[in-house]
Image (tube, rainbow, N blue to C red; front, side):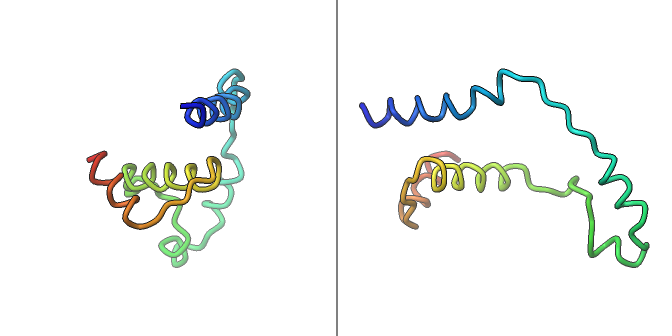
Length: 87
C-alpha cells in the first residue's frame, strides 16, 4: 500500500505543474514546413495524423510512462495480461 501511495504522490507531483498552468503551442513552424515540402515528398514526410490509431497511441504512452517514469519492469507476460484486462 505504501508503494502505491508513493507512486500516486510522485505522479501527482509530476503532473501538477503542467495541469495547473495554461499552455499554448503555436504551429507556425509546422505550417511553414508543410508549405515548403515538394508534392512528391509529402507522402514520405506526412504530417497527417487523421489516420493515427488513438488507442494504440495511448497504449504505448501508458507502457512508456510505467517503464520510464515509474521504473516498472514490464515483462511480456505481464504486458499481455494488462492488455487483456483493459479490453
